[in-house]
Image 1: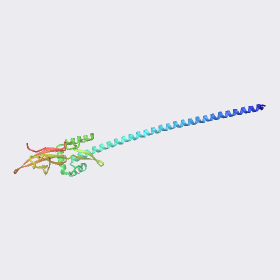
Image 2: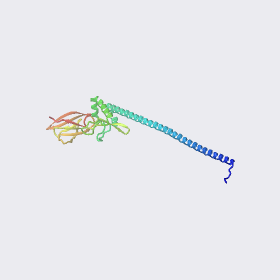
Image 3: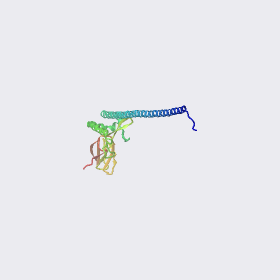
Image 4: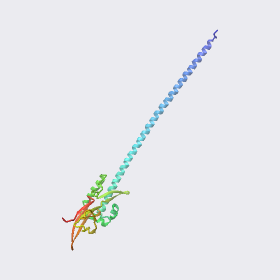
Length: 257
């Protein structure tokens, strides 16, 4: 015989099943709600990170721009400062030359050859040339302008045409290196006597026995005299030579035709 199930128990079972179904549905809804909350939280954090990244990126760009502007301003300031210092140094050199201030020129001039001192005697030809040629200061200014505008003013070598005074940096200031000139003296006889500004000098022999090399000398005006012994007579040939610009080596022909 089949067991008899009362109506009351059947109803109770159905109610319990409904409650379990509701609990399951409620649990699913709660899980779904928690999932949505976590999803929204992740989206919120992602957007927040993006916002922070944008802020940091803008800040980095702003800092980089400020650094670049600062670097350009500093570079411009240094360029202006160097240009001003250079122009002041040129003015001081010109003033010292006009005033024949030997002590100041000993500070401003730097000679590559240590055997050539900067003193009143060695500067006298330069002073004489500038006194006789006031426009020479314009030549110096053009020379300085070319050095400022060009990276390489000349090619080193005996046949080159260097600046009369080359501007150089010495420590924390500008100095001027005068070009040292030499002269090839063409003689009538190999043993002719050579005098520069009234002082006897012994020229260096060259490949040509009738040509002697003298120098080096600072820029300036020089009187070159050749004395030829002709028996008891002494014949003189004299020429004024201006060592101011041009090639490092000047050809001075004092040989008779």
